[in-house]
Length: 172
Image 1 (cartoon, rainbow, N blue to C red):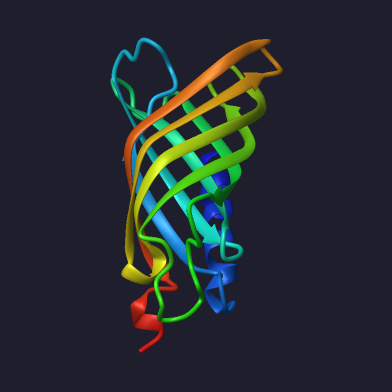
Image 2 (image 1 turned 180 degrees about the vertical axis):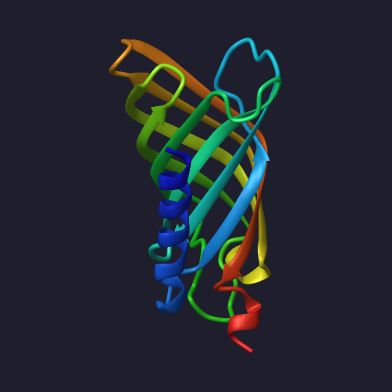
């Protein structure tokens, strides 16, 4: 399963590297939690691909780090819209430096084979693709686990996006 997920992330991140316009790419790492109460330490990671001036796609995961690394994982994909302004202008002019993201997507959990739809909100993002870095603060997501008939709540205090394509380096 891990090999499939790693291959999928690599494949998704390689394709848009040759694309133009709004197809910026970033890798992200940060805090993530989806079990309450948390009995260890978990972290989140993601690949983010810009789709348009306001839309982006995230392929993400949250994995347990302690006490047993990668013993329980949650993976997902979501499509997010920037609410306060354009996230990218596909030029040297930066998009909105502060924004709010609202997303919809789905998840899969390896611990109990749970899966289902989810909605998310990131009330504050600081930075943009043109600056090469963006911080996402207080991301919260709520999903319905259709397999186990339950509710899943995700929370991330901070995620930091490191853009590898679509930054100021690509326009000068």
